[in-house]
Amino acid sequence: MRTLVLLFLVGGVTPAAAQETEAPPAAAPAAAPVVASGQWVKDQYDVTGGWHIEREGDRLVLVIHPDFTTTRGPDLKLYLHPSPMQGLGGKDAVKAGVQIAALKSHKGAQRYTLPAGTDLADYKSVLIVCKAFKKLWGGGAL
Image (cartoon, rainbow, N blue to C red; front, side, top):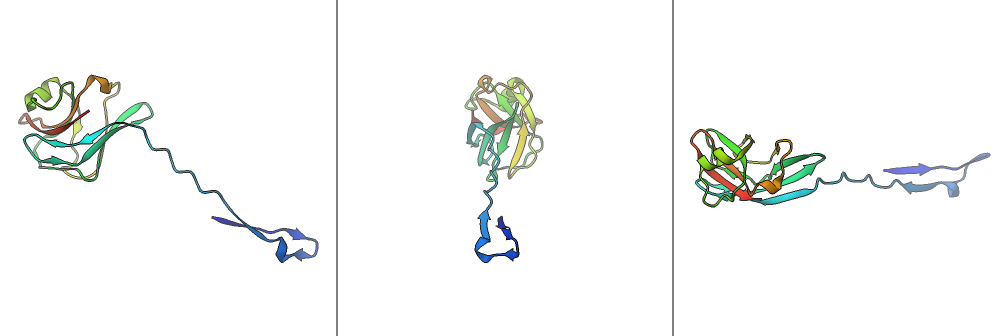
């Protein structure tokens, strides 16, 4: 944004007194701090793309990146789990995991607020599970 500053003298404006000044650029909003990040890894079904968890004030938000894609399923849910994904099954994820939310879409950018009081130090993986059939789609290491 440019502002024209004019100086008025008795009898009018003198061209030499007119000068231009440039307003400072607006500051960009600060990005939320990222506390964990990774790539989705296939278990029983294709899952690709990236994700991260960011801190927004006093809450944690799981951000699924625009490159995310997975096979459609009837009852896909997101979970945090205290164990690594390797060696887990869908029953394990549902039984011992903490459900975050239902997956909104099988592709594209998405955001999910984690349950209040979540301490990521208590978890080793984020998972996608078909809850109805107890099938582990895939996940990522925290």
